[in-house]
Image (cartoon, rainbow, N blue to C red; front, side, top):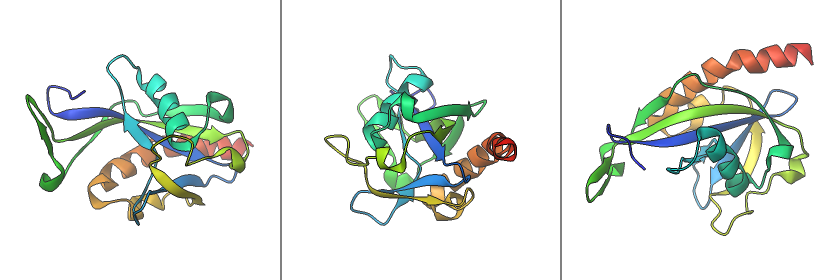
Length: 162
């Protein structure tokens, strides 16, 4: 599903632990790290897509996480020309994302990157909250900065009261 401007609707997932570190996942067979993310299907709300992607990519269900918040608006990024997907009748020039901040309630052992038939990740680790803004592929850095900046007060307020 691509909108009239050429952007594919997508969810981005930031999961934190009680120390305020975030889950950072490595794409299978690559030295490329990112937050879990995935497309929103035509019949889904962003929240429905969040929980489906959470299960598919990390093997986590809603009982394993607490939804802390989400970005107010869609955050967009454009793909470099070489990654633009052209299909009959549509051109995908980038993604528009709704980002979610979640707290892991379950154990770290509950995270299973090989939970689906076609895993997207082969490893994950906890990293400093701002680490992803320096390490993600260059064309996603602006969206990562905006999402993390908007959601940071929710995390830091929570950590101050726990």
